[in-house]
Amino acid sequence: MNINFTGDNNQIDKNSVIPVYYQLARIIERDIFEGRLKPGDAIPPENELVRRYGISRMTVRRAIAELINSGLVYTQKGKGTFVAKPQLENMVFELGDFHEEIKKRGMKPGIKLLGTKIVRADELLAKKLEIPLNTTCLYLRLLISANDEPLIFENKYMVYTKKKPILELELKDPSLANFSNLVAAHGESFPVVSKMVLHASVVTEEEAEVLGVKLNTPVFVVEQTLYDSMRRPVGWGKSVFRGDRFKFTSYVGWTKYGE
Amino acid sequence: MNINFTGDNNQIDKNSVIPVYYQLARIIERDIFEGRLKPGDAIPPENELVRRYGISRMTVRRAIAELINSGLVYTQKGKGTFVAKPQLENMVFELGDFHEEIKKRGMKPGIKLLGTKIVRADELLAKKLEIPLNTTCLYLRLLISANDEPLIFENKYMVYTKKKPILELELKDPSLANFSNLVAAHGESFPVVSKMVLHASVVTEEEAEVLGVKLNTPVFVVEQTLYDSMRRPVGWGKSVFRGDRFKFTSYVGWTKYGE
DNA sequence: CAGTGGTCTAGACCACAGT
DNA sequence: CTGTGGTCTAGACCACTGA
Image (cartoon, rainbow over all chains, first blue to last red; front, side):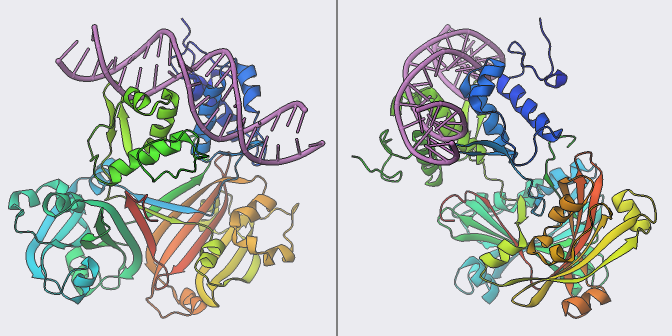
């Protein structure tokens, strides 16, 4: 029985548990990462790979599809498949679920409900949620922390529907941090699109007090609007991230290697 | 001759110029967007789709592969293919090439070279570029503007290689904004990975003057480190974005529809 | 066990590039 | 014209799931 790993050589082991298309993708990828194929170079034609490795064309194409998908190569009909040039000036900043991110970093996440209120929509909120002035809305204030240090101050609004009252219990649930879950459970229709706008600012007096930072501390402000399938806004919120505790990091280019 | 568009109905036209896998992907997508399939629901098994539309299984699988790729569905071996729940709490902020972005917004991009200098690495730079103290480096200062309003102030450093001197002419080239191009052309080895770190801050005195803003104006600061294929840093820079002019917007969820 | 998705083959015809 | 990638078929065997 053969137990071959992908990295051993440039041969393909058809009896391996590792799929053939995967083995081939790694072989080509290594040729690129190790400089044998440079940006602009053509990789071997599909038929050549079929002959060289004795596999079918669909399998070759699947391997190449993976490389296209990761942005490492691109194809030109009638010409060939070429190594792409990494777009190093592009930035991509991502932030996933807070709870997960914080736990991933080995810290203890915390959510404190600072209060809930039934409010009537003022001009700003009416505009954001595209509702009439004075519509009854639910207003939430949350403080999110890691290792008991406050990090994010959140203000969230959704149209209040009496038919589906919000239970105090739920508000203690960690998934409360997931505003979209709350809106899904208690709104008229569930949200399917989220728009976020990030800008740089400095804390207001109230934010400084809640977050326990000095005045003029820089912060990230994220405005989130949730939309339902009819493109109607169903929730709106503003989150203030402490600028002295948050950094967004992005890696772009040929980063497949060692993470 | 049939000229059918995808949106007409839920039938597949094999004689259309539109690929069959694409037509099928759009049909399933529409079932999801229009609520006939909800998150958690199973989509029809592959064999069912093969029978229903009279197409081969590989074609069905390609359609599903597209949906998996866009995050709309996920598969479970031995169980089925299911509609995914949109992850609305995730943020993804992207910024592409400045020149393109600014032009896309119908504005006139400008780059002003504020100066180039040969400097010796101080402690900070030596650490950032992982080079000995006092190594000779090239230092660039740039001001990037739109419609003649200054927007970004950039400071960039790379190890200075006498073998490939930098011509004044090149520095007037718009592609100069592309730091990685400059490093590629004049460094020892070309960069393949870019690390960017974004944080929120307020302007320093010098930055305020260059950007023409008041003290304490909030800014985004982006630190970029370029690495070669051996994971060695080959360039480092710090860019200051006016917080009163920059917003990053992100759409997440089922946004395939209109835009 | 039957049903599901995962992989793979050995053909086929097409549209497009460049000579 | 030849060579390239793009699409598609009609099978095959496998591993996993759940009854």
